[in-house]
Length: 198
Image (cartoon, rainbow, N blue to C red; front, side, top):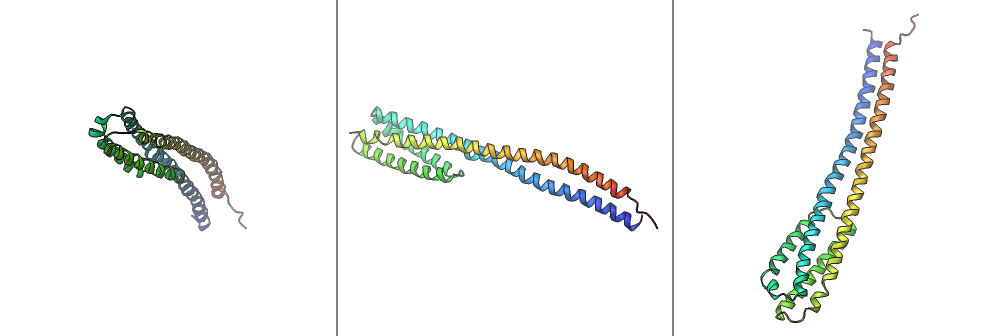
């Protein structure tokens, strides 16, 4: 095999290898986007939504006890419910929060702390007037509703990101096929081409 033929073969192979490596890197990047979006939807949205649901349930128990002026609940169950809420707060803090969500989350924790303080005052007053306690629940529940809404919006946004990445992968796959066919033709031309000998 002449040097010229070897160069032609090497050039053809290098073109194909370069294309395969480039498209592989692009596909890998898009695959990582899809993986990240799916993980975010689960870890930071569905888990957060579950935590919000559980917190709402616990807040609802507290509100019912406050409406009924249930001294038994505050004597026996309130500390346990508060501990469960603290555990949920800790777990929610471990999720990835958007800037808007951070602000709302901070407001929720502040309102919840105020609720805990008003409950302590209510218990110390020997279950006297509960109107101050009842006024705290709407703020806490409103925070939870807004946080739940953010989970839906963010989940939808992450889904759109993954769909765009999948569309890009499909587009690049089609482009790869056309380029590979084109390069195969060029390699065939290069290999088959025989310069005129003088």
